[in-house]
Length: 418
Image 1 (cartoon, rainbow, N blue to C red):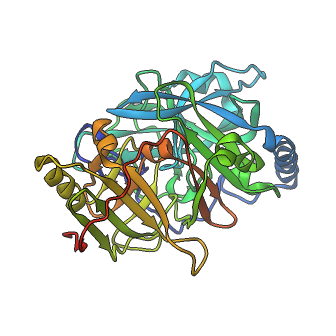
Image 2: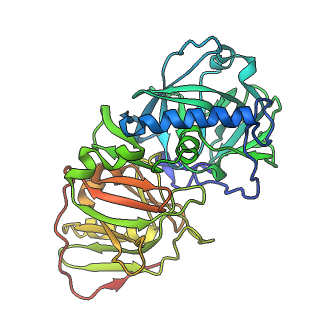
């Protein structure tokens, strides 16, 4: 799910694409809830929390559950807010989302349990799906302790509690959203009571600060290796996925067992952005290729991102039209190859290959509502991925559960339609 607008895809698998609000460089720090520079005491507290995080980072392997919501599969991370008296509250299953930067709990009762002292003078307000059914929420920001399943405790985490929501992941076992993208996607507004209902005109227009979600803040504040890895088995059920932090991202069975496919350039303009050099379809009889997609982190026309919160791989309509044409001809669908720009200049593009028939059968592929590309959750069923935030690269390792047809050796390649 990509924060900002919910509707990059049509139909029940709709996803959101963020309003990339820039120039709001403030961060929510300090005990008063104001976007001011941290005091010495706050700095010391952050340092201690970061030291604790670094000391145990290599041990943090956070289990993820996989369940269906909103027409497709999603990953869930279990998080417990800590009350003012130190009591660890009931764990909440939150949708793990690399396409947003919001950590928000659905249950409004959490607000009273964590206490007034944790309340900030700012709120989160997000609207999605412009032109469609109202989707979004608003709620006050709080700062407190968060317990994450797997033994991780985050001190001074900034999160929100929904006062009102519409069509958010608050049903079917989900109790909120855990965004792990970058701070440009989560804006803070001066707190105001917007009422018990969520409407398309509810949110204020001018943010006063941006917010770094708790896990990203912990990763970036320490001196250790700033990387995280995500694995998904491709199946539904408990502990079918894992989130690895810091050194554990490159010291686990998924990283060491499969062959390294390559290292792609990674952007950090809010999303986990990628640059796509080429999209190709190879079937038994024909082969097509599209290049010059103008799809990069700095592109003003198209966004190409990796998003665990989107349950499909979303491709331009021209690509999907070709797949439909092959299906109508009743010929083998072949393979889809997406080549990413490498992290190192002069290196070969990183080729991610998928069995089209398998994607179609699982309903894991769909046309995007536009020219951009979203490598959604099905990406992780085929590739274990490490995000190296310092080196600005995404590392792809082939997992053992992928089924692929060999790429067909077709005649001359034809350009895909725009």
